[in-house]
Image (tube, rainbow, N blue to C red):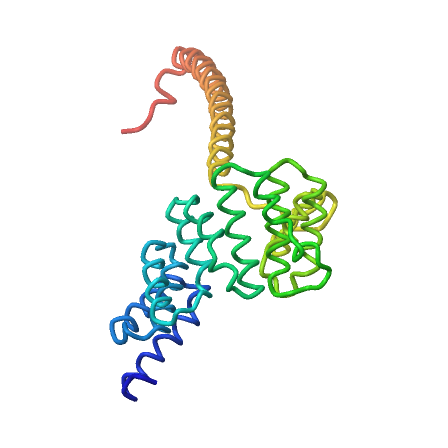
Length: 285
C-alpha cells in the first residue's frame, strides 16, 4: 500500500511468482525475489519473501539478513525459528540453541514454539547429541492425540531421531503415527515405514520378463552377441566350404587319373591299328 499503483502491481506479480515457484523451482523463485527486492527493498513483505526464497535455495547467510531486516521493520517474532535454522545452515548449531532459549520464544504462538523445538532438536543432532535431541522433542504436543498442522512433522522428527539412536522398534511406532497424521503428504513417513518393514516398491511401468512356456516374442539379441553369432556362423560355413573343396579336389584327381588311363589305353590301341592299316585313321588335310 505504500507504493505507487504501477510499481505495486509490478512488485506483486514478482511476489506471486516467488510463491508459485518456491517449492518446485527455488532458484527461479529466488530470481523473482531479487527483482521485487530491487523494486521495493523498504517493504517488509518483500524482504520476508526474499528471505524465504534465499532459504529455499540454501543461501542461509543471505536469508538471515533478509529475515532480520523484515523483523526490524515489523517488530514481529514469527520469523525467529527460521532465523535460528539459518544459523544451523551456516554451521552454527550452538547459536541456534541460544536462540531457542531466548525470551522471544515465549512470544511465539503454539505453531512457532513447535517449530522452534524442531530447530533445537536438529541443532542437538548437528552436535552429535542424539539423546538430547530425543528429549527435546518429547513434549505435550508430541503426546497429544489431536492432529494439528505441525503434528506430522513433529512425530516424523521424533521417529527419525529414535532411528538414528538405534531404537528401531520405537521409531517404527512413531513413523506409523506420523503416517496417520500426515494427511497432505508433507513427509515421506510412509516410505520410511515401508523401508523398516522390508517392503520393496516395484515400478509398475517396467514390463515383467516373459515366463518360460509363454507365446511371448523372443528377446532381442544384443549387438555384441549378434556379432559373435555371425562370426561363429561364418566360421562354420567356411569349414563346410573347405570340406567341400577338399572333396571336390579328391573327385577331380580321381577323374583326371581315370582320364589319363583311358588316354593311355587309347594310344596303345591306336598304335596297333597303324601297324595293321597304315594311315587309314589319319586326319585328312
